[in-house]
Length: 560
Image (tube, rainbow, N blue to C red):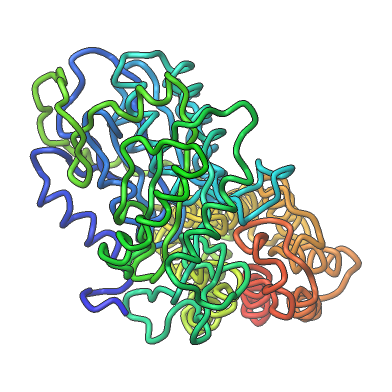
């Protein structure tokens, strides 16, 4: 369990604040994460790893010369918002552009992708290196669909070293993608991890077994196997990794034996003895191997093995010195400019909303009532939604929806007090949902609500709900790329939309959405974090579809 916390919902923010206070000479906190306390003496590419919290020392623990220039930090196991990524990038950019690097998860891909588009529009070059090292999550012919797990550490290290050499953005990106292509990871879990404030872990492993193919966001292993001895586990790990040796690769390898949170160093040393022997027997030479906790998952008991095949270039970057709060290697010569003054956070200008008609203001009041009702319903369902999500995902859906609706209601109320009409209130709700919730659901609900608000506008006091739902659904489908049958919120959204189009009242359409959400239990997920655990997911409905159905049912009483 997680023993020490104040407000469980603020755990990630509290942890980041403590880290930044402890290491104030090396890092400084900015909205959305942290960056180096100093600035480079001349423009250099800013390497910015990121993702959800709960993985320390990934991601902000490796900020420093030779490694990361900053880190974008979301809520526990939840991708940061696009706004947070933009904030960190703007603080870290020194004129040579930024490269985001993150594991291959839908929420991260969406949010960092949107952030890069926004940064480019502002004149800051932004690129991506997506990590896909988890060999258990997809077969070799679908390697681009694999998750990013502890291989993150090697890829981030090589990106940082390449940037520290002074390479330009294209070359730094090439280095990171080259490292990713040469990296393979396999992991296993002995027990699940527990969110602060929760009474039970996100998943359990039967006594005497292990979950092979774990994720780092509290996802269970892909299948349970008998718990082996250290020697047998080493043979299994090494055998699986070497079976995927890249064609043409040499015999020198970077190796990371990673503890996920509750497996102690002495246990890792026992496992390492046999892993090292097996690698050498296979003709490989480990180069500066790392054994310890490098990419964790709160208090999960588990281990993973990462191997990166090195050529001369990759080995130079792997060996390069680095100086960060959580990782040091060699002696680094780092030129920096004077430390910047503390950030001055300007008071944001009051939003300017189009003049709203009295009818639109009255409609806005009704929408606020609807948001308040949805907030109550989501808070009541938070634990249930998290439990559904934990079957084949990371268990954060309930918490993410609560954060989203809280922010959305606050944003809409603020807009209403500033004189906004119905459309602008709903658009403001969407913007705040996207900014505060993070994750895939944060992006989609935020974008969908903004599109719905734009469809309403500022004048009318009467709206055609079919037009509004169409705008919401079109934006969600276009942005998320999901189709009916993929086991996502779209499986409830599209039947709901269709029911409205054919003339059913909202309440009847909501019942259709609820039935469709229940029916997702029979589907196999094709997108998101549940995809690698497709078999486990069968029999359990999709959390996103369930939460959407809950919201539209809750709104039925207020819809006219």
